[in-house]
Image (cartoon, rainbow over all chains, first blue to last red; front, top):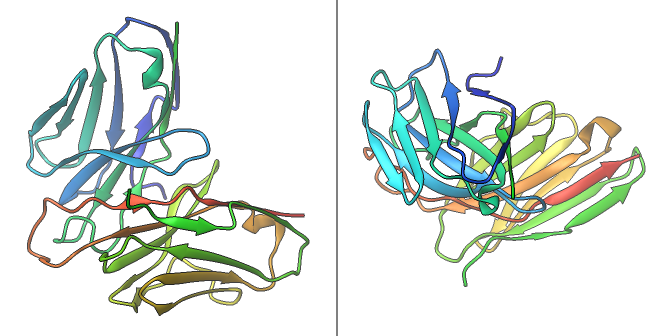
Length: 114
Length: 119
């Protein structure tokens, strides 16, 4: 059973377009993280959200944690080819923000075409 | 530039052979995680250590997988005997966790992975 469902699985759009990817669960998480992974490399942390309803911005990326702390979204404005990669959400259910490991979604493969 | 170092980067082996993957965590980090990534299952937690003590290895097939941390600079993941279904990318990640009351979490850093193919 996959605790974190990410959608869409694959997304290919043109440079300059906006997009949103989703991370949904029936479970409550104490915190949720978003990672970006490029081919041949390990995931790299983008952001951690902790409070229900929290919104964090990282340049053109906007992350939101659902009010009930069960879901999250990542919105990219004016996508660029450099945004291409696998975007992973990961939830922590321990009180230490991932001290007992993270549950990962399968990811959204994003391709931004020039 | 501190980073998690994994060896080997790539390994092709025959079914039944022993495979050992090694990880050097970032100096000062007290927690080491082993994850496995496949297309079908995504990233799965296999085992983790804190202050070199194994805390949970419930994600590992016990009969063939073993994880150890002989010292603070080395974590190992061993598969014996290996099977084709073990083919995956194995990631080591390290971080520092002290205050279990904080939900904000800490950054964990992943290595580049060990790409294992068992034929």
